[in-house]
Image (tube, rainbow, N blue to C red; front, side, top):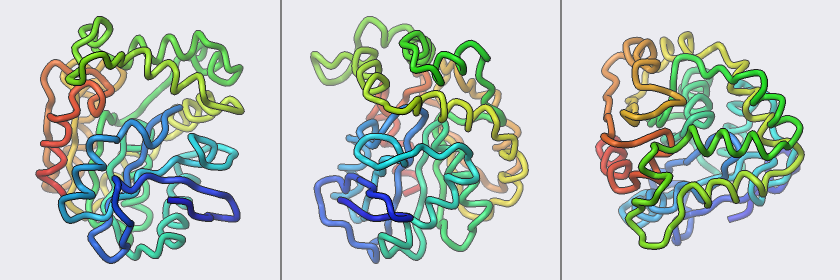
Amino acid sequence: MELTVNGKRVYGSTGGRDFDPAQDPVIFLHGSGMDRTVWQLQTRYFAWHGRSVLAVDLPGHGKSEGPALASIEAQAEWVTALMDAAGVAQAALVGHSMGAALALETAAAYPDRVSAIALCGVAEAMPVHPELLAAGLEGDRHAYDLITSWGFDRKAHIGGHKAPGTWMTGGAMRLLERGRDAVVGTDLAASNDYKGAPAAAAKVRCPALFVLGDRDRMTPPRNARPLIEAIDGAAVEIIAGCGHMMMVERPDETLDALRKLL
């Protein structure tokens, strides 16, 4: 599905069905350096079980025109423009990592536009080591190595995907390498600079779900605790044996968690 948002072409996947903005829409938001394809299983399921689905490539990612947006606040404003372009009055938001921060900020800043949020692999703060940030801004492959190494649990480094022959870490590397215009560094800087998560969480009034991996080395579950405590009635699902990339490492378990909210 192609849309025009703020004069730029934006691409999103709809799970194999036509997008109907009146049919309980849910928008999936990817993390740093990623694109819509990380949500393949989850989007297809919901599209065929009563929801309209849009897994979007954020500006400068995947097939969407750039440049990448430099702050979480700017991305949140962009999400509402995306919803306007798609004819969506209100939607549930599912975000991963940077996308989770984006979903949180959008729910806080534009409460009338968000019906529920699912935050996957999120933390109160997401600081980035200066050397990794510099490598990302320079398009240095070392940044992709570090993100992939830390993003997956150790078991995922030697296999274990439910689909035989699927190389999880190799696929993540290829996805990061396809990025353009230092998009990885821009995303990392946006995550590093975002300090508004605690204040945003305190403003959330819609149903909220946290989906966390118990072996996540990038956003350990304990670092999400202040956000969980700030949102009244927030639900928490901890996925066992899972790192930061839960929708790839543990796709069925991630889907099962999301079904409880959506």
